Length: 579
Image 1 (cartoon, helix red, strand yellow):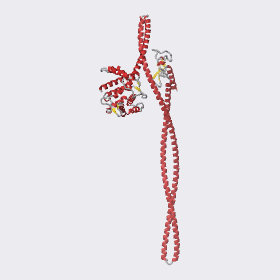
Image 2 (cartoon, rainbow, N blue to C red):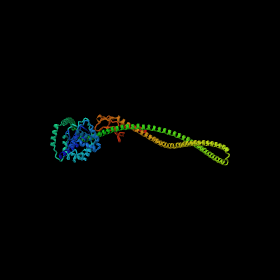
Image 3 (cartoon, one colour):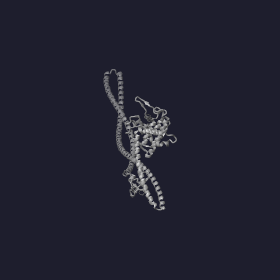
Image 4 (cartoon, rainbow, N blue to C red):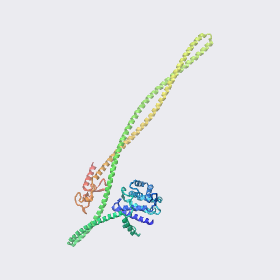
């Protein structure tokens, strides 16, 4: 187990080294067909399979490294997207294919080292899947995580659709790493013979490696042909130089010295030109990056323009809604004002009715008092008549006839008085009923007065709300003014962005191979007369025709422009400042 761990560690170091070197030579973006990248995934798969426990089931034995990789979803929520996308792929039918797809997606996310570090930090969970002496359970696992951190520099563009990840054969191609074994393991004894024997055995069994070898032989043939052509060109150049040497031999020794000096100058010029060529390549790469940035900025600007248009439409809709709300608030204020006026008129009428009812109640009370006084007087007269009748009966017993007649008269008077009393009682009851009705009306009027006071309070609250609404209207008008200013500013920005887009769309970037003469002076380019791009129009000029620099909207710093673009941009700037 220790020897296997050591061999896998060496293979992982070699695969990471070769992958980084090939990526730096070809560019940092890699595809699925890149051979060092495929071999890296094969070595990674062997490392994850080392020391895996065999799980037995009814179907048979199962030994897959996708089981421990599924733990990452529980330990790190960021990896849930990878797990769900792997499970949803219909092409994958085995656990091995899902594990390979998981490694592809983690490398594209540049988080393969982070996810494996989370797994190794939780070894108590890994013990369910691995043996105690497995590579992932030992210190070599942390070393592999440290090696994988360097792969975060690479950009991998891997397409999982159409890839048959289930049936791929994970065989390590040692021919890629034979040239780097001595440099990596300098002090240790390398078993190169064993590796070559294994390579021979794998070449016999693996058809894929044979296809790669045939492709390599084709490449070697093409390179040999190119080398033969270069040799022929060198022979032609040598013949020409020999002819020139024979001609120059006829000249004097002074000419030979001058020729040697010129030869040294040419060598220096050749080295300078080579350096310039390298610089031009660097500049070309930078320009390509700038072009990509400009394209990204263009897309961002288009998105920003769409968002600005959406914001303007939404703000216009909010303006219309706010105006409708203002009109509704004004209508509500008018209605409340009319209601307040009607309530005040009703209050005045009810106050007048209350005063009239109070006057009527006073009159009824005075009439009641007069009726009570009449009753008292009639009772007194009755009592006096009864006393008089008793005295007369005692004094004049013999005068019965006359007295009876007087008594009958008195009885008639009493009956008439009783009738008057009954009528007065009935009038008194009617007056009491009227009083009760007036009391009821007065209580109703008091309740209406309370309602009127409540209406006054509501009127005050409505007036306060009206004041608050007026403040809100003023604030909204200010906000509308500010929004109008922002809209005008955004329109100006959109116009600037449209001009930049027009400038970007209107000009095409010429390639170096397409131009052989300067567009302005029409002189042919050579070693002394170099090519320079105009950053505004994209055409190629010489140094004399493109020595000016100006700040463009798409570049933060002043850049090289041709003479015609320089004059045109200066005229635009002067016209814009004058307007």
